[in-house]
Length: 206
Image (cartoon, rainbow, N blue to C red; front, side, top):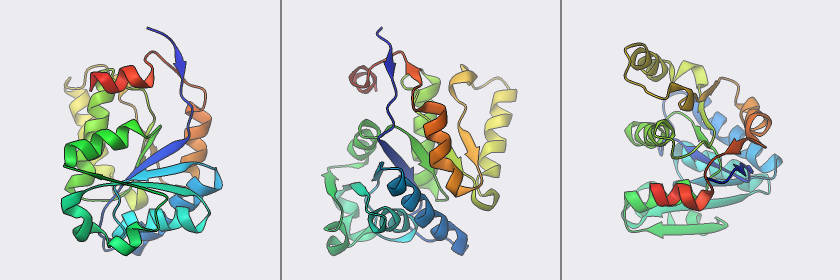
């Protein structure tokens, strides 16, 4: 294997297509988006223009940053409007959810999970699974707004304590409460982090 270095150029945001009941969730989405733009990074996300997803994209675009939206055809009119999608710098419409997730992984150097529902949970759990299997070493962050992810993190700790998470050292997502600290933490911790596998090799293994 050849040693490569993570170059953080894009951040994937997993989050809800709904706003949730706490206004802090949407505000956090906008703040994360602005932070991504301020640091000269690209947002990769699920293409939705509503809810928290829309807030993150709006934050990036209003800050002069670039956004790649990746969305399955069947969700275009459910999670977005075609007019709003036209505002994105890059739009990729996939055939299905599997293609969407693969494309999001391929174009992302880090993953940040904001509040969301079952789909959001499924996305970050799959990324954590790939990390456990040694298929990537990209940074993973839980934006723990108002303790939203505490039950999930408690469950992970329980599974680890009961011996069901092997290679635990590979499954160590950052948990950050303050949204402004997320991008700086990623850049500080992983800007020059060594990896064993090149990007193409990682993708081929998935």
